[in-house]
Length: 268
Image 1: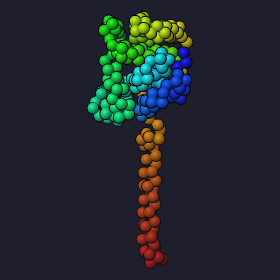
Image 2: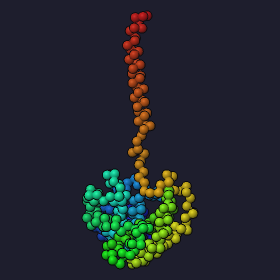
Image 3: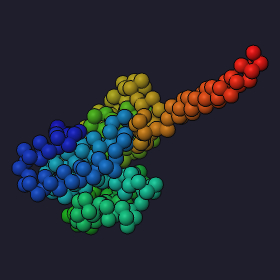
Image 4: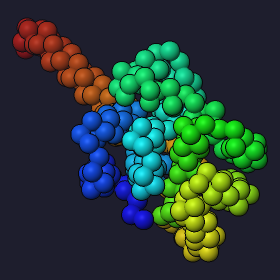
């Protein structure tokens, strides 16, 4: 499976599958919203977060899941870690929901809310698996989004490049078998095979990735990296202040010299 990491790779793959223009337009709107909510955000492996979102969507597309699920893949955790400019963390507020609905429509926004209730972690994986027989078709597809999210972090050995990765590696190791089984029980054996292969590859390469290739700040979570042009430029401001101060000193010196000139001539 070729997993896209850019919007262009994803668009080309979807076009090759023959998606109609309206479906492509929905994916494009979802991508554009993700770029605005994750501008400047990088994963703990140093990869732009939008690349991860595209990767998740690409996996779902390769599984031939509906376009609305691909759009959810692009935006899967916007309410958890998207930057809406409101300073809130992990919140689906009214204003946030209005913004998402305006961009991708009510249907996709509702699926994103439902997705939040189906997240899988070490403490919930067993419960989610037990509920699978009772889940409707849409919820089962949303669980596939969650599995694709786990898979995308492993297919390029990304988790091994995280600044701090012990917590995510230990969690996925504990869930590996169950995540694979969930995929099979969802009727997605190909997804189960990919998860199993990815977990095996990660385990085999765990000691091979040098620490020098990890982010130098040692981050273990998603991080906002502010461009230098947007950072407070104290040295520059200090230099400006010093230039202004020197200018005032020179002006005072010249005035003092001018005022004292007649007195010197009279004494002469």
